[in-house]
Amino acid sequence: MKIIYYILVVLILGIVLSSGCLQEEKVPEQTNTAQQPPSSRIDYSHEYPASAANVDGFELKKTGSAFVVYYHPGDETNANKVLAILEQGGLNLYKKYFGFEPKDIPVYLAESVDEYVKIADFPGGKENVEVGDGSAPNGKIYLYKPFGETIPGKTGGVIIHEGVHAAAYQFFGQDKMRYLPGFLNEGMAYYLEYTFKAGPKFNPLDQIYHSDLLIDGVETGNPKLLSLDDLAQKCDGYISEETLNFLCRGQGTFTVWYINENYGEGALEKFLTNLKQTQNWQQALSSVTGKTTSQLGQEIQDSLKLMVEQKKR
Ligand SMILES: [Zn+2]
Image (tube, rainbow, N blue to C red; front, top):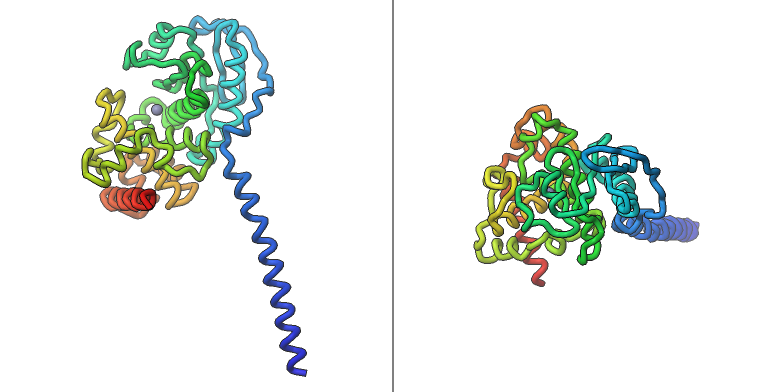
């Protein structure tokens, strides 16, 4: 009798375990779909209606739920693509990672470099502008000849990137925007740019522009990696010095990636909400991570070091 009982228990256990395994097998499939880059899921055939504009020298506009694209006659296809990327890709990302819900953000499509530098008030000057570039200095997005570039996918990333700056500006408002340190503002924009292009599970060392400088910094100490306080002090506004510029952007992106990866998907939204209230980024970071600024900075650099070592293997 006892033997039959044991056989039954083993049989039932087997069924339970194998059904559990079957269920588990389905999970990676679902994760794979979720990990597809959002850039691959934009429906460009969706037609956004056009209407007359007469704003800042732009004759036409296309209006979405959160963005309005202003453009010149002949640029309709590009205007539709820009709006598709912001409405179908940007909106979800801005809400999911930062809690931003942008409204009525204007986007201008400049046709010449002169027009771009003038309307965007671009501090780098004409010689630092390339086709497919963009900027968002005051809550408005300016794009220079979107989709005209030779680097595949450049414009899509730039649009998502500038959308972060514009949405952040709207979230904080003009007077409080200065409390968000430049390296985090840039880091957030690059973080979503890479998420859009490469999917949410991207490897920062593969995506970060000039991550070779971060790797050199870890391995040789040259360039010297910046602490979080240094990043906040040195990475503001337009940075013309190249190495500093790449360090600010690279370390900023890695910082945002690290916080999201290690403190959960709602961590950055919590940080931004706290920052808007306290107007103190160190305090806001500490409220999310439970660490002091120097502890967190050390933790982030240790993690970067580990990733560099893993990449070598
Ligand atoms: Zn930027």
